[in-house]
Image 1: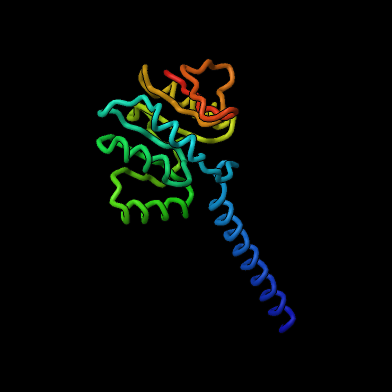
Image 2: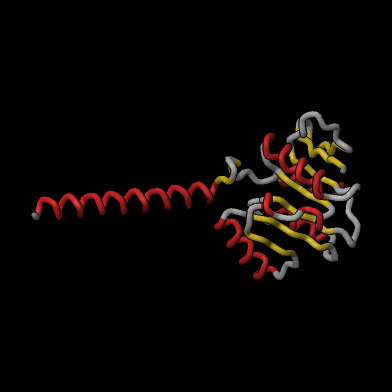
Length: 182
């Protein structure tokens, strides 16, 4: 009988260990990646160039898609404090850190923790993203489907295949921000 109990106990410990390991790996991967996109911050010179060249009116709403850090919104907010700025972040730790930073520095923008593919894009006028090819195409398709004519999409580094940019911002010799317009 004790052999059976030892086997049951060993199976229970193994299940617990596998479950624990699964959640640790899931948490770690969410810290550094989402949709297969590793955290790579926008360079300072690109942030500065974006803020300098941003086409936006005071009444428009700007959405940063999964920025990973807060530098884009902080930089835009410093130049345009009257704008309605939003940020969608799906990863737990960047979301929590950004909330703390926002409160500490008394910054006025809204942060949502959610999957942006479930967000209604029609309420925004200007978008910014720094992702990888297949996600940029998916985002652009969603923007074109849901947003009104004139909506702008700033794509850091990645061109959308089969789509001609409305404007290309040269940030450095080999570094660009591509702007697309609905």
